[in-house]
Image (cartoon, rainbow, N blue to C red; front, side):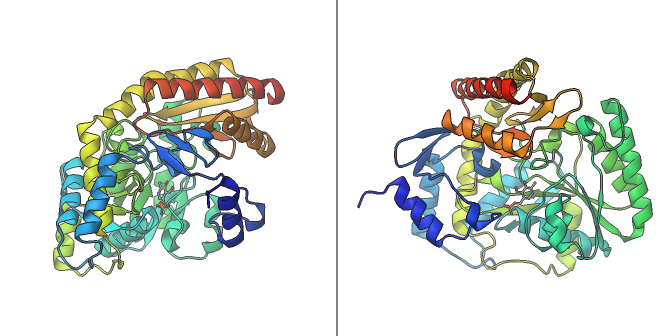
Length: 437
Ligand code: PLP
């Protein structure tokens, strides 16, 4: 029997319970195959993937070296308990430590980003003997016990009674919570506010500040230049650990290996997932500083999963990181991201009234859409849905969230693909500006 879009769609609708969805409202796109920055369905309709799926396919789809490494590992050793030493895991950990700044020595592996945050939180609590975790309202840290409570957006509400978490406002000049007029003022006020939150929550009770260096799901909120340094200084002043959640921004997305490298600051724990192996096999983890690592030489760490450091995931990490190094993929993200994409988006923002702001680094950008530039009124959900469908019809797979289009192609995106994506955005934003702005 030939596979068709209808067959896959029907199987999906009948048997699959989707995540983050009201099951009766679904109309998922059928995907049959992919390569590089392109995906297609069974009818041959092609899409330029400007979403990197959930902002994870940094190396693009079906990279042959990664696929080959997974196959080879499957034939050699398809599964092994985390307690055993295994070559692929050692090689993956070594490569990640080598990419981290000085002062990081070990990697704890998990299956995804959320459980990596869980374990980073557990390490911080165990290391400091303190309980509270401070995190930003404008954040997303994953959908498991502590990670969803640390998440600042309203999705944390089902778990709002979990103990040991408090939130603070992070900088977002375009919709400033601090009534700031410029970036410097936003930075100072956000840091003053964080100091007050620390004082009010009791510094002696706070284990860690958990922060995405560039909050991604919340809107690619590039912070003011000195904000993260200011957070580091506050953490040091009060003996609080600093955890950077690099799950979305890490491994090339911003044009550097880690997003925090743009801000001249180093955390105590680095949480990663997504880009480390582009999600070819589920994987995540925590890079642990020397001091915390030494602590756990003498103390038990109560954490781990049956599939922690799964060999297929580890082999895919080794091959991904080697390919990223050998093929200059991080450098490509910086060059195309800023030279072509960033500049192109700036132009679109000037030309189309519907764009309130564009921001981002590397291949990590967001266009914030408004119905009125003066009042910055967010574009309505129905207009955003219309835009999403128009982009799909033009052959772009977009990442649309609230009133934003996140422009997040794979880090391998070529200049021609970036230009093609910009041309599609230009056409659709032009049509929608005439209608909605
Ligand atoms: N942290 C950040 C910054 C994320 O963007 C995400 C997912 O989007 C997560 C954590 C959760 O990762 P996962 O869905 O792999 O559990």
